[in-house]
Length: 307
Ligand SMILES: [Zn+2]
Ligand SMILES: [Zn+2]
Image (cartoon, rainbow, N blue to C red):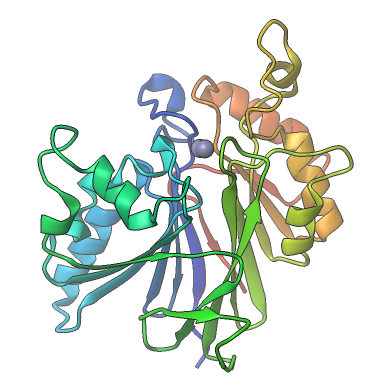
């Protein structure tokens, strides 16, 4: 049986959260999306958007009255604040019924687990990560890995694609990992989730290059949905005395170049600058839709059914 493949945005903002009257339409929470396929839930990044997601997942879990564990995967693109700061307030972390599988990069020689634990250690936060009631697994991963799910089982299997034997069938969800080096100071992971002949790619905190970021273009080839960083306007990117060039983020023109060269069907711009108001984002969406018709600017609550 083919399961529904859905992507939902919970946090679309870069750098820091911006609640307030100027961000009501697109939302002020920092980066978080979830990808659901049957019972598989893959969360990408734990910006403050993960707080609402966690509350929703916990409420649904108790409403269903399931006897099974709440299995959730959390993938990290990198460990900057705007991609981790919601984790201490992620309700499933504190539920004994949860089984959480964390995957992310080695950062400056440190394992994912070490970095996350340090961010939740007194005096920074009163509860340390290990004492939260959920069962937690941490895996530091790289481009040599695949994460596979054999539906309907929501548990991930970490595969070394050069050494392990594995089989991909119609009921396999595949997560691929790519390392991009355009983001300071240690790069980011770009993730590609595939199921039933469809694919989505999440490429936040990446910057364009002359003629296009070809590593991202190749990784996103023929994706049904590409979610791409577009933090800055062209003016911010170039304006003196503080041009944003080299900050590791894109402008919409770069995202469109990648989308066109990769042949993707739908493009979503995300990681909006905290200074970008709803009015500015709406104006830019209209402007750039002329260049790529199937284009959306990410907003909290936006969902895509990939079919
Ligand atoms: Zn970021
Ligand atoms: Zn970053």
